Length: 200
Image 1 (cartoon, one colour):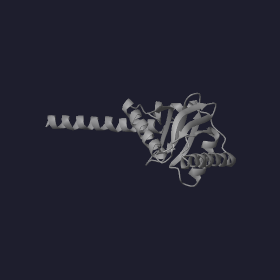
Image 2 (tube, rainbow, N blue to C red):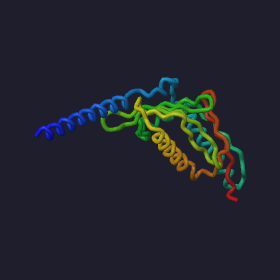
Image 3 (cartoon, one colour):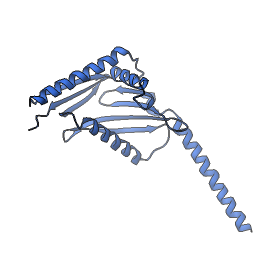
Image 4 (cartoon, rainbow, N blue to C red):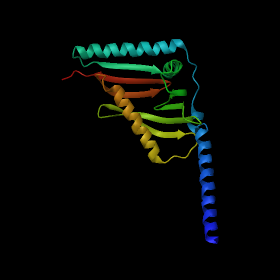
């Protein structure tokens, strides 16, 4: 009888510890990530969102025209963090971006990104610092740090996020006839340079 009571007490204590751990994890998950404190708020504007659209449209037309004529032409596209943040706000307002909040900063050689993602219960607050490297003619995101609230994460979690981001980038660029040769972040600007593919 004492043995049974002892087992029940042990199970009860384990249950309490597990519940406490889950509650602490849930709380840490909901806190603002440390990376967010390093970021600068950016004032959006409809004009900046329109400028983003115009730059993308112009670059796309230039790439397609060069590809259609079999011309290997160098293309350079520069986007400011004000333009991309303004565009993200526009997409959120249309329900086309599955995040509650977002912010991107283009720093000196890297980018910082913050997003609040709708999840059941408490929303997930994520943030990351990363760079873009060119590997075999393709841009690859390399994360320097990734936060999910203030929850301690294993290194494998950061690697999985990095892999997922690169799959998304590859899918977005798969139909673009452009070999990207350089990606630079500097003073609030992202500059992408590439050469159009000739198909030869």
